[in-house]
Image (tube, rainbow, N blue to C red; front, top):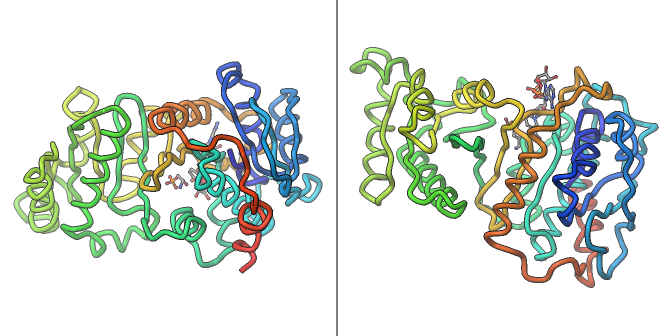
Length: 348
Ligand SMILES: NC(=O)C1=CN([C@@H]2O[C@H](COP(=O)(O)OP(=O)(O)OC[C@H]3O[C@@H](n4cnc5c(N)ncnc54)[C@H](O)[C@@H]3O)[C@@H](O)[C@H]2O)C=CC1
Ligand SMILES: NCC(=O)COP(=O)(O)O
């Protein structure tokens, strides 16, 4: 688990999670600054007692909970409730390190408490969100996709962190078909085989006979037909004001939306305190609560830990389906390939 943005609720949520009895039997490698985790524990009102190892310590990690202290953002320098390049750089270092633990087969799943994308961008202007950074750290061009997960329904999206004004121009049959395939594969791999996917329309009333836009007829409908021809159980375009209603009535296991908030609003209304974001496509699950850094309540001990716990449990459940090979032994070149390499990536 990477500790999220030090100025937000991430440290508090990480501490709360570690103190949760539901995590007592889980092996958790926490990566971040020890003083920030202590600050989070103080905010959360919990006491943590876990072994601390330094970043360049090769060898075996103890079972249970352990903190890898990167010493990258002393708590005394943190301004709560504000984005900063320092917090962004530390977040990216923490994230790169846990990604490399997973790539090395040491961790089965990756989790992070909320990052702040503005902080991250202040530190690394090249990346607008986590996806490009994951590709860089893992040397892939997989461009994984984000899912929002509630037990009763999953939400995948065709476009994500882009301006709303660009959504229509970024839609294509190929892109929607790729999202359908990844939704089908990811949910099947997660123990929900052959998911029934409702595909949201872009325009009001799915265009209403081309009255309100042509994308539903010209792009979404052919993409759904192509998915169905491949054996994917997809239906749409379905007017987006009712597609989630139909899902929670039991018609769909997942909804594919065209843009970020088309799904997020529905999902957060249904389960703000238990929503999980799953980033799929990298061979191991990457999970985080669906809510963000909550700068307005950072440091106040008010952050609800429900979504963070659900993220951890989902990560553990998915990881159990595909366990890592070489658990808990750091690679010999960890100092340079692991955290050292991660720090260099952030500085480059
Ligand atoms: N898991 C992650 O890494 C996520 C990161 N973000 C990032 O977080 C930053 C802030 O995003 P916003 O849109 O402002 O959303 P936000 O989720 O941080 O805050 C929205 C509202 O929800 C409340 N809230 C959030 N989490 C809460 C919790 N655990 N308990 C009680 N109340 C909570 C906040 O106090 C605020 O009023 C952005 O940089 C965004 O990119 C957003 C979503 C997920
Ligand atoms: N990429 C994780 C994350 O930030 C999830 O939140 P969202 O911005 O996609 O809503």
